[in-house]
Amino acid sequence: MEQEEEEEDQSLDLEKIRLLPGSSDDGSAASFQIVDEDHTLGNALRYIIMKNPDVEFCGYSIPHPSESKLNIRIQTYGNVSAVQALHKGLDDLSDMCNHIEDTFTAKISSRDYGTEEP
Image (tube, rainbow, N blue to C red; front, side, top):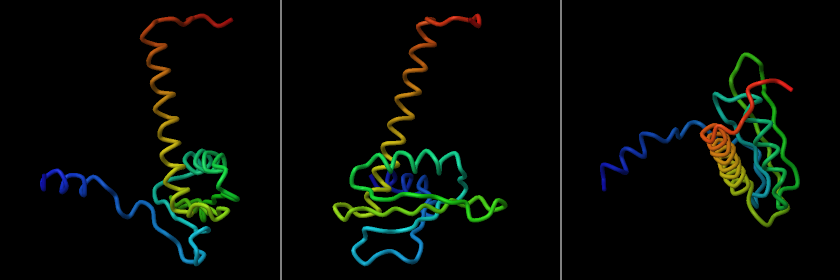
């Protein structure tokens, strides 16, 4: 059991996402920085988080093109915290990507596709 916990701790990158200064006291608004990411994750994550009815605002920026850092700001209506909204957004995006991959793999495996352009 202890070895499993050590392996899990080693696989988690605790420096990947950090909370930036300037969060609201009630936790309904916060900014995060995600390292080694760009517009690919930023735009998809912003879109998914904005689909959450508890989220009032979500936006992202790349502070400088030469740095691979993504800043994301989340403001909620107060029913959930910004951290919870971020976690839900990451989970929802992961679920969506898994569904797309499964659907694509099933279609390829069934060989039910055309090889000629219309």
